[in-house]
Length: 314
Image 1 (cartoon, helix red, strand yellow):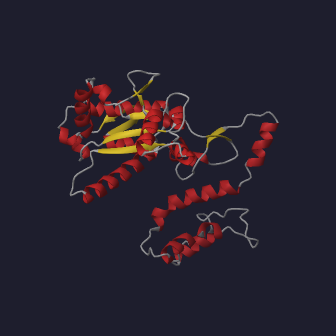
Image 2 (tube, helix red, strand yellow):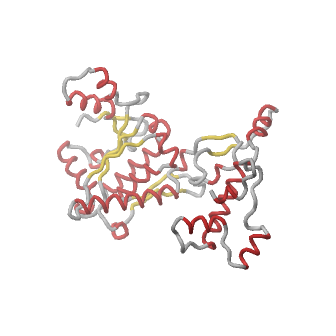
Image 3 (cartoon, rainbow, N blue to C red):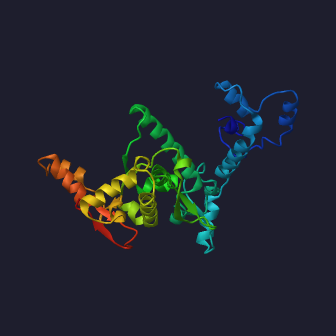
């Protein structure tokens, strides 16, 4: 607010962004010990030890964002298209998560699916998973959960550049690896010594839109989970391997088949339609709703069989 107020005219509009770092007044203000407007605003809100020097890069970026918002890039962009000229493509989304969103007025696209999860999304996800597992362990006398269920939505992962997807990988204890072009096409196992906790088994239900947009990421999750299942580690520190071994013996299948944890609808199908069944009253007991969910969402993704989604009855 302090940043915007400095450039707001008498009519309450921002027509030109003042450069806080080049102002003569700001220079003399620094000589006499006065604070920058944004620094003073932060101090007034209860943070007296804030450092202007550490804030400088952040405020410089926010100033850049404000200049791009104020600039009239939209109409010139439309005119370039109407004149048959080439308009540069650019990603859409949150400029805080992805600075490349600015300036606006370019040919916007959602994202590059092959580039998620981004490094920023991975860092946020690892922090979220650490706090989640610490909380669950505190509530359970120090014991970590052996299994966690996840639902992955297409729109959510577009907005966050794959944070939910990265949380699944973090729980398993694998890390996505990008190539020189930024494409995420493989995963690596985080050693238990570095992980510092057991690998948590994760069952993932992907929406139909997620399946359509991020089939390569489903492949990534499946490979990461099977990598963990095949790791020669103590079962008390690898719940994925523990459960996969049990299920392989019970169902008489291979360890890799038993380690399938990524599910969605069949190709071309969307939603479990459980809410619709409830709304229409077309059910008598919960077992019917459970059966409908499993019938609609019980198709396993298997990286060992590309192009196939196999329905799992068990």
